[in-house]
Image (tube, rainbow, N blue to C red; front, side, top):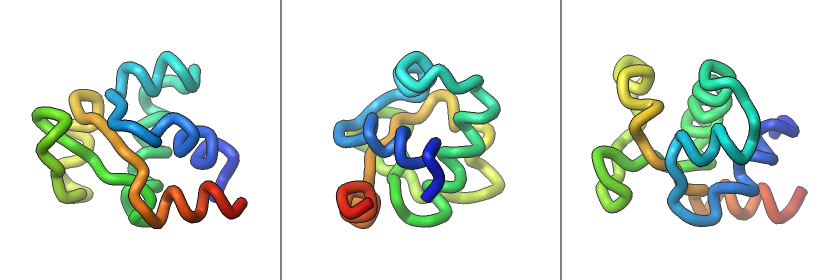
Length: 85
């Protein structure tokens, strides 16, 4: 897990919007998308769209279209890895 991924997981103990993540981390939107994609591919976070209660399965082909409108939450595995680092 990279430092950027670790910092993102710090913010994902609760469902958090892309905009809030961008504000709190200071990452530019393209870099934030890249980091979120990596965490999703590793199964360390989950995504929600169109509302915070509807989990959306990660698909590489459609992620870019909804990344900035989605919300995110650390998965159980993500929390375990974050807390054991």
